[in-house]
Amino acid sequence: MKTMIYSLALAAFVSLASCNNDDPVLTQKDWQGTATYFASTDEQFTTYYRPAVGYVGDPMPFYDPVEQSFKILYLQDFRPNPADTYHPIWGVSTKDLSSYQSLGELIPTGTAAEADAALGTGSTIYDEAEKLYYTFYTGHTSRQEVVMMATSSDFKTWTKSKSFYLQGDDYGYSVKDFRDPFVFKGDDGQYHMIVSTQQGTKGVLAEFTSANLKSWESKGVFMSMMWDRFYECPDIFKMGDWWYLVYSEKLASVRKVQYFKGRTLDELKSCTANDAGLWPDNHEGVLDSRAFYAGKTASDGTNRYIWGWCPTRAGNDNTAVGAAPNEPEWAGNLVAHRVIQHEDGTLSLGSVEGIDKKYATESPLKVMAKSETGVTENADKYVLTGEAYVLFNRLNVSNKLSFTVKASSKTDKFGFSFVRGTDSKKYYTIVVSPENGGDDKKLNFEENGEEGIGFVNGIDGYYFPTPANNEYNVTIYTDNSVCVVYINDNVVYTNRIYGLQKNCWSINSYAGTVEVSNVRVNYY
Image (cartoon, rainbow, N blue to C red):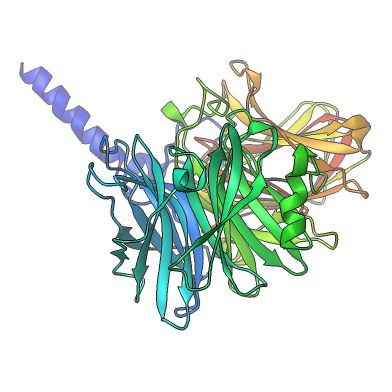
């Protein structure tokens, strides 16, 4: 019995010690001198925000002109949530998008008997004349969804309106699907509200207008949804000479953030007229990957940014990326990108200056291993031919990786791997693969190694045009398991890869010849 008690006590001590930053195993291990696999776990996130308790659900970003900061309201997911009353609206504040200050709970749920027993997505707008913030949000029960409203004079204390209430079936729309109100001011000086709903069996965006944010008039259907799909979390804004609708596709096989564009609001509305399929660009309107959802934007007048959540995965399974039964979990970490507008009005996403500046400390770079053939090193440049790789030393918890890949032709194939040690049974790779004879590239996510499954079904790779000069400027930011890849300010690929911190990583070639240069690793 004494032996058993001692063993249990020792196990408890070891368990506690493993959570301690002063654990001698963690602090004394020669991280830079070994390439063996380390089973790392997530620590506190410091760039891609997650609350101390729970997770970030649908974000509702807003630029506060009074405090001149971004406020991001979001649906707080506790796991487990109460059965009937869940997803209260919490908030964070930021000026540079690299760190966030919690504002705590702003709008609580109602009781189980009230229309807002559970809360859903909405939007915030500031009335300069009244010096009042308005947040329109979704009230949800098992029976119905309605649009509700709360106001605040200081963004701290919010008062729910007892009289404001928009119900879908009052206007010929669905009772159960009537949600995600988004409010913006049009060129006509009127406030416009867009609501995701259904008319019969057809998904539509309903439109309402108001002169004062209090009384709203139905204007009918703003836009029909193509192919009987459902557009969640709509966001409408004007950028330069173009109007945009950003939305999240609910269909499990798609589940991505997409957009439409038009020179006027009327042209924007016509994008889906008669299901014509007038997709706006060669991305088919797609922004980011399946690991970035519920994206909505806000602008400080100089830059526009988009926030979405990167989902967690049940059992920390890196392959849980697709549709049921292998879906990612709802909610996760808050991820932000800069919105880039091109001359033709198309949009892409790029890195955030505040985040980039945060990764200020350079980490020494060391080659730990490489393939027996196909690798040539010369003055910090690596030429990889055929199936070849270079394995670099261990990463920190939060990292910025940057390098340039110069391909010899448009059909070359390369990638970069994480959670890779010399003894890894599994590791994870983002592959840049030629498509359409090399005219396009596709980002694929793979589980490699002797126990890996190869291509991860369901993740749905990301297409982009091959650069004319065959040059790829790659920047990767990691914060624990969140991994965000930018290529040439034209492609962003958010993913969650458990275990990448404190493990080695590699750059690989699979076909053709690529030259890798300017490899840098920074951390904070």
